[in-house]
Image (cartoon, rainbow, N blue to C red; front, top):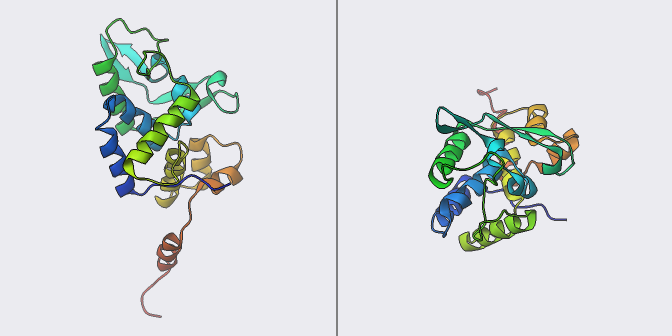
Length: 198
């Protein structure tokens, strides 16, 4: 089975530009960033409640530094922790402060569909497909964000063991299969060993 496309920076920017023109632009941006900046799966994005990502402190919503996914929210039916970086926390705070009414309850769904109900894993996948088609990105799927997240960490020199934990994989072999390797990347890697003239 062919793996989902890994996006480069210009492709991700194009995707976000297209996302900004959609009817529910801010919500759709948050969906994309949860995938690309935290490596969340479609089923996990769909299951998020406000209390999973936010806390209400001093009359203001503040993003948590990590999401504690319960067993029913994950692919493997096992509770897991997702680390949120500062950029994603800022995006979540902006979204919740702007789009969640003052009477929002902790267990309310974080990302609501056009009908005001929650998404399913399939409808999140459909949303990604629509966005990728609009951006002219072929071979991309709802798993592209997760693969791009993992590959990006690898390219920044993060150890596979740390990536495994951030990806929440039980096996390092699974993590390694997610990392995209292209001829261009092999050439760049080969240049790393260049030293002064021998």
